[in-house]
Picture 1 (tube, rainbow, N blue to C red):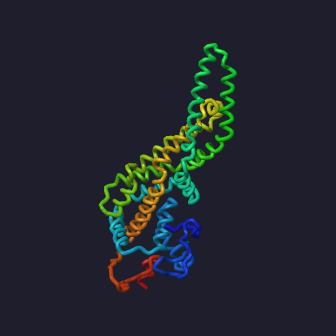
Picture 2: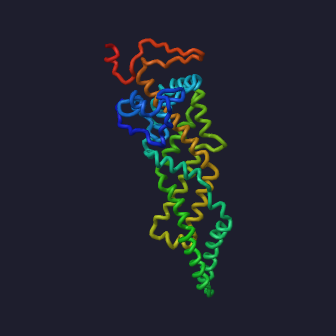
Picture 3: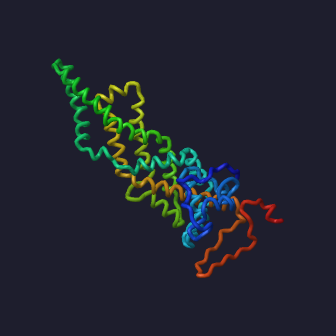
Length: 325
């Protein structure tokens, strides 16, 4: 397993500073670097298979924050099940590489999905932008039929132009937030689909599957639904789009559809990505467990007294030859 350089934690991913270096609440990032838990040639790199921002953040969080005994046992069961599933783990990792998103892009996608659907609140504006294209169609037909309606048609075009260059600027800004991140949709949808369709037995893995199917919305279907709107957004790049937009107010109708998705599924996106991040973190542990079959999963016992019992304990970052010395 090769090492790759990882940056120091950013304010978005680091846990809050703590008074105690090591406490029941976790380990602060500075101490974690000193202990080779984070950074170059660290435990984090040893578990470096996650590729999405949320997967990397989850691994880092698990390293720094202690889990209760029951959570540890649930994760161990999931790790044991995922260990032999090499192809599945590699397919999930591939989708993560295809995402290729930065932490900043991830945060912006979440922020858009959870932001208010402001156009839906402008009921008068919505009806105006629906009626004006119909008026354009009607006046165009009348003009072709020989009716003297050219001044009226030009007047409607002027109104549409005013809308496009006033409120339309905000409309286009909102659309641009989604379009700029459309390259990740198919990869996320494929990753969600892989997880949902897998016949898991471990309760922790079933919990993650349930999180991707909550509220009657399957995550992969919803992300693909969002991706299907992107060709409508790509029309805006055409050199012929300006007359189309002025005649139809295309951008307003597209934002309406995007906000429909946001109202139906936007608030669930954070939970879906969190479930993917946890699956990636479990897969990272499972990869190490599979690659090092002689390493054991510790037995966690519920006990009032603090005890730590180990036999042949070695450092996970040292090669086996050093262990025998």
